[in-house]
Image 1 (cartoon, rainbow, N blue to C red):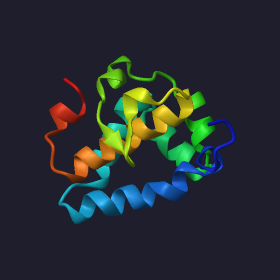
Image 2: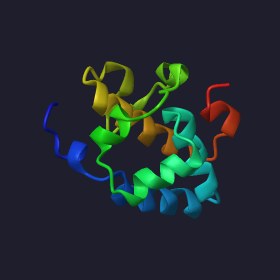
Image 3: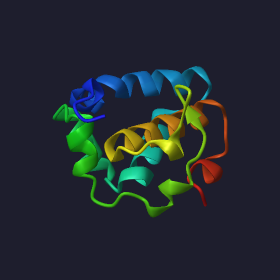
Image 4: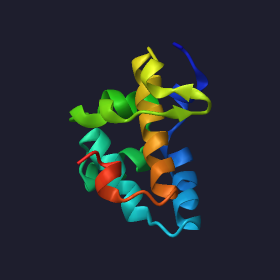
Length: 116
């Protein structure tokens, strides 16, 4: 899916939607940040810098310092598509993040979300 419009969208434009989604279900911004840090390897300061810089999804994942090796354990569907069948790397990373936020909003325990 090269050139897909979501690649150019800033993470900061979607981030408030992630927060709103989980807060409606009793979860917190800190938990969203925790799953993003787990997935990407950014520390909190670097994550906030990326958000303040309005970094695109494509650049966000290409600059991630240490993509978690356990992210391949994230399975299931997002928007009707099986994550493990997504061939394009950047789209798969974006969908991993979407799935983690969905699991958080559904009340799944953090240790299971983080594949411990």
